[in-house]
Image 1 (cartoon, helix red, strand yellow):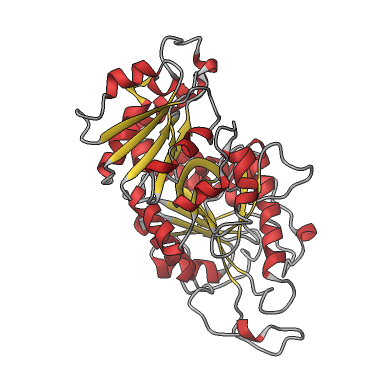
Image 2 (cartoon, rainbow, N blue to C red):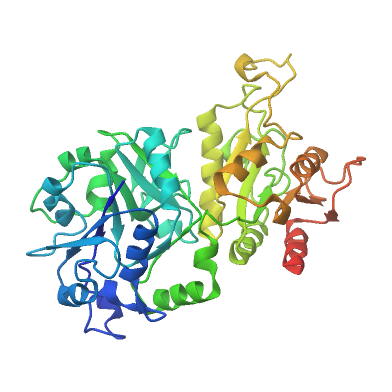
Length: 430
């Protein structure tokens, strides 16, 4: 993939109190326009050509970048005769693009391993790939739902339907498109990808979601601009790039995050501990990835379907998100090796590598997110959790909630009352 489009026509109305003499994508962050960070990222990943879609005060962009002579990349401009949302300018370039291309928003500071994104797009055989991530305000964000293969099955533009339970998968405003996407864009019509195109595109094309913890944040308000500057200055932006090793806290689910009523198989039986969201939010703010790893033999036992288990997890993510907390991913093992249960599902009655105490789920996450297991933790309530953590060579913390008071010879690195105290230990070690 050699070509990218950057939507750079924004006026920056909400930033006008700071500066109104330049277009929003030229707003300096630590002395450098946000567009320059994007151009340098593209160059680093082997892109050869960038199209800027411009409008308001675009002369400032052209004066700074020219045609890329000083940036080692070919830069061209499409000047919109009138603002046409996020879609119109992209459609106008149809005759210029006959290969897959990347679309970025010029007001988003990002630091991604674009090679991973492109490899994902190609491996899925996708027509379109949308970059997504969890955030701490999913209730007012554009959200997606996906199947087990990361294929988009629904798109919920904000505002959401009343009572929606959702995955915390937020549209992060970076896309990979094959040229076939042009067939679903209308020339000369003002439209927005999130509001007008994505809610139905997955019904016609193979659209996939690439979930990443990497840093992508728009700086469209003074407060957001300040937060982006702080993240860049602190090193948080670069540290989140998946070419850097990540540190992670793996959480068991039942008995750690929620009350364990035994074999939970209905959303109405799932109840978060009152301290769960705040504890996870503290881990989010410390820069840890938070990944749930949970044995769910309810599938093998025939107590619920994969879809019903997904609804339980949607309830969990919705309630966590309402309190500003999020998990990066949920890994679950549907298997159970022992037979003889009424209604059991034979295909799941197998020995596997994912069921704890095996470390399979942790190792899957390690590969996906480039996790440094030596800097990571597992918090669980059962001996199986602690054994899985030890097998993966992470620091283990056992809590006394759930099954945590049952005696066992497996010794964790730490043994505490609840998730609250477990997080305190991690804070003290940082």
